[in-house]
Length: 235
Picture 1 (tube, rainbow, N blue to C red):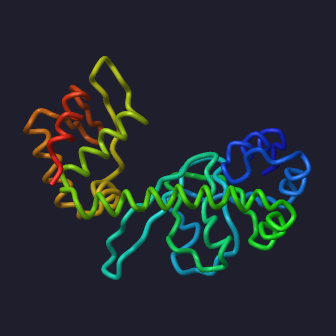
Picture 2 (cartoon, helix red, strand yellow; picture 1 turned 135 degrees about the horizontal axis):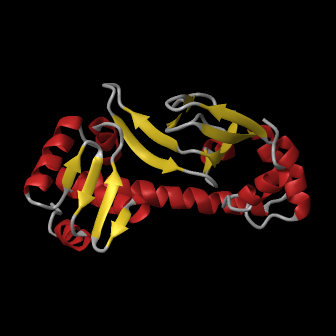
């Protein structure tokens, strides 16, 4: 697929690691990008694989997750266009600490570890940007640990529904409709539990009148009421 130079440059300027680079720095970066395409469900890299480079999401969404020996998954992030993936192992030379999978059909740019090191050596301010991005990811991971340690499944499920409503919901007054992931196992992976508990808590929320579900369309009659329930569901 031919690369649209102007569109690619605009995308790179949105990536926190590369934002505010000079024209000279972008001139170094652009010819070293390799475009890669992944189909929905395809693994981009697996936890423990040697890190060959970082990725930049051009289109689609990428799911970052950890897996247990028993096969359970914990979703750490779902990254969309303008996001960079795997900055830390590129920076410290370690293996990929988590797995990445295409949620839908994705176009990604790949930037090799060797080229990234060259960029950092020539332009040290990129290193500081990496530290800021990694610091932000660390804060999110601490938040995930706090949620898993100190809140109930009900609380985590409501918090996820509120986030989905605000980021992806179709709003009509205080009512919001969102499309749930294809199955409850994916919801479970995002909040650190199992499918059965997600199904049970969705049923309870529906019985309480806080949500309405038809197939995978979920309607929140009152987002304010659901947010108020969130405040009362810690424990």
